[in-house]
Length: 386
Image (cartoon, rainbow, N blue to C red):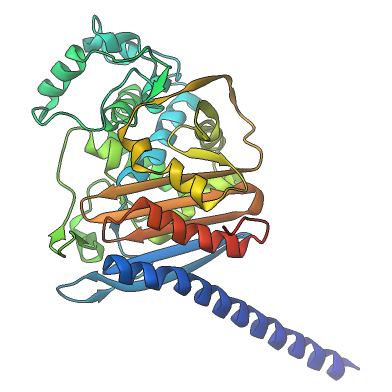
């Protein structure tokens, strides 16, 4: 009888391994079907894709990190993630609140006295983090090249709208939030990210400034004609678009957002703050860093929410008072780009499902959304496939 039990147990184990391998093969085929045509269409040298589903992590790597030496992409390859850095900046600001260093309703002038007497003096930190301070532009003007000229710009800037009435996506806006959060915490922003936030999230290979020992893992981004590119310095670049990371670490960040239970209590509360809805902008709800939609959602609606118009034009915004702290069945997402890189992260808490796509070319958001939506739809049979 004992031998029969051992034999049955061995058979069940073999069948379980076979089923798992078959499932992995199906997932690989599913991801391949979206990613390989995408890379061919946009001449993307390399991509790293990571999926979390029901707590299980899966990694898929394609192409090369650098064309010169043909180094293969791996889940350890470092990519620039551009504005996908913003949810991380927002998480640090929210952590500053949960640790008692500031509140998001504080005014900018409270944390940077040099702004007193300017229109930004009374802008709230929440206004800055949700791009609703009155119309700060996408980028600083070209003559803002150092801290002195940045302060002059902020002091002389004149709002186009009443605070809270319009959303205008802006690096100087959320970048200032990151800078003021760091001031409140008493350390430079890069130090706080690399020394506090990344370790707390389990992101062991994420950087603002890539150290020399990690440079071999740092991919080159590529222009449309495949000239190598990396991000150039700019004011508040670290705060707005400065993170370099890999697929493993970005998936850990997504998993922390899906299930923060294992994190320290202050960080758990900070993540909840980033998920809250502060403004309604069309069909999108603006969180802190993250952008949120009702789930399920069609491909067309998600592409519209990530369209150039949402990044380049002012949009009427409706303040949610109090903020929506129970998102319900929602999808959270954020795109990010630098001159040579394109990134996307999306997750659906109710489905325990998340996806990260990192590429060393800046290709259209609509194409990123299409590929990701196809993968998510196949994994969640309740999602619309049109």
